Image (spheres, rainbow, N blue to C red):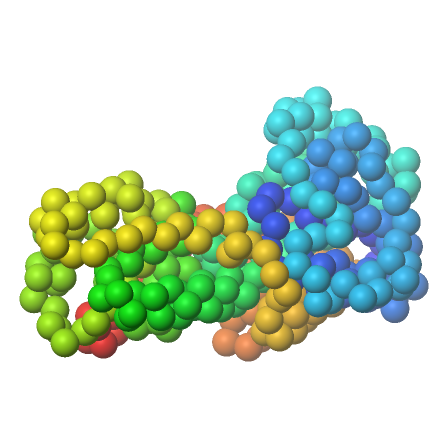
Length: 324
């Protein structure tokens, strides 16, 4: 029998499309099970400062289609300290909160694990990050929207590349993970994809450009921002030096990848995981991230979920070489 009566939900770290759908699912599931539900503004920073308020069904009306997060998000240096976490615990206890749902990524779950260890409060996590770099789920909330944003942008850039016989080197997000670049590159027919998980062989790239199909009027190279060569501008300099006659251009997509209305996949994923998070708290679970593996709800301890995926499916890299 669960003793949980009051739960709170918050978003932390970088925003991702689908966070609002997840908030909506947590709030409405909590109300369905006759719990009192609270929202915490600006993640751990808001928790430390007591920026906590009650939420009802109306609080989450008409947000499932919105990007960003209505609860806002922020980094909190104070929560990184023992004193800051103690202050956060005292704040949530003022509202008799006895269960938390944290929506975020690696840093969010690292903080949650420490909070559980020091103050014995149940916390369940939802994977909200566009990078898709958390172990324990096939896809994170926001990833599908982000790669579709990239595909739409690259398709438009290719129109210009085709018209002017240009080589475009396009930088996408992914400081520690190249999954956005990898899937987007396959989906846009990129000639090459440079990612942190695979050692960048600039000679191989230059050779590919030199001996690629001569009848192609455009070429697209996707670079993850965390690539060891230093990103799109550094790669462009290498190409210009080797091929001064190429009309080479650089495009950095930047933060447009974080925003926008979430895709249906992200809305459904966020909704499923939000419901599961509340039910997990009622089942007396704690310290786990809820994900989806092969279509089924899966639970992964924070200690394992926060380890970035450092290897990619070899088959995806092979596909790039075959199809380019």
